[in-house]
Image 1 (cartoon, one colour):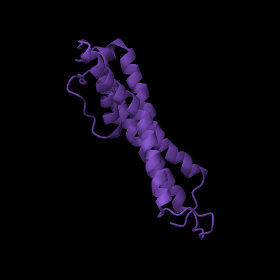
Image 2 (cartoon, rainbow, N blue to C red):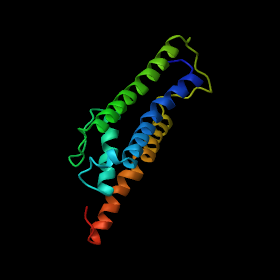
Image 3 (cartoon, rainbow, N blue to C red):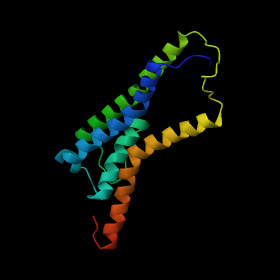
Image 4 (cartoon, helix red, strand yellow):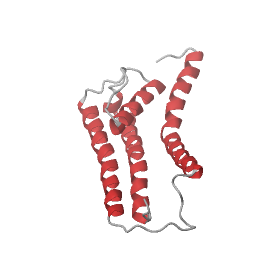
Length: 160
């Protein structure tokens, strides 16, 4: 596009990437640490943890679905998942509009040696790497540990 990305655009991009993940982890931790959040679980243990995290991830990211074992139709989950939807959507929309507005007001800068081309293989590798790292740090520990612990406990005869 020929426009220079500066601090404001980078900060807004970080806000877009990090805010839904932090929101998901905060609301999930509130749900698993309160009695009202635990009472809606149909499955206790690691599977219940996966159900809670999936409910908030789905609410913050798209349509707000939940696993069948979680009774999300309670006052607590209605309020917290609606908060996740509201913050999850607006925490990406508003910074994206701020980036667009900032770039619209900038003048075109001619390419130089310091210009990082967005059509190169290096850019694609870096972009995919950031997406994988952020996604892995947010979801991988819980979504792998939950089923893994559940399988190990099932192997020794403990069911939930």
